[in-house]
Figure (tube, rainbow, N blue to C red):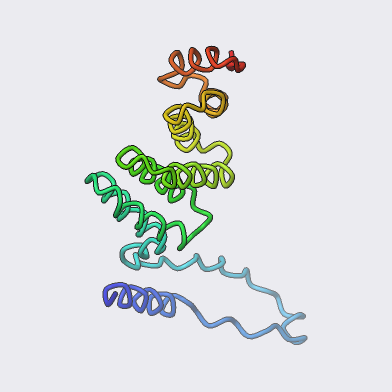
Amino acid sequence: MLHRAFGVAAALLALAACQKEAPPPATAQDAGAASAPSPPAAMAPVVPDAGPPPEPPRAMALYREADATFQQGDFAKALTQAEAAAAADPSLPLSWNLVGRAAAKQFEATHQARFATTAREAYGRAVKLDPNFLPAWQNLGELEAQLGNRQKAAEAWARVLAIAPDHPDRDRLKAYIEAAGTNAPR
């Protein structure tokens, strides 16, 4: 923090040193005199680097912490952390997707329906915020397939293929969609 304060102070000092006093306004007496060419406009001052960029917003910091916990396999803690990230910035699809992933892992481990509901709702929030957010659509499809909801899984995966026609799992997703009786994107 101190480094940043000194960087800002240095930038302000440099800016003040580069600025020149403005010439006095022209008078009627000056109008009759032969005017000398005006000097070129002063170039904008160069502001030195003010140090490292500001810290990421709190929600992103919470998201990163939750994602690291998820990667370590502590899904219960990751769920709590991801929910805190989503609460800090409800407009962040990444956080909602991570809530869904952690809740889905908790569902796999416990078979408690509340976790499946939490995952479904979180993925739904993510795709409502960003209708082209591919990871949430794919995760929603995986969850619905795991729950035996073939039609809902096929609908989510059809959306995946609409967003990313060359998706690496294209053939598998298309086969599932067709088996469920839903139209797969061509």
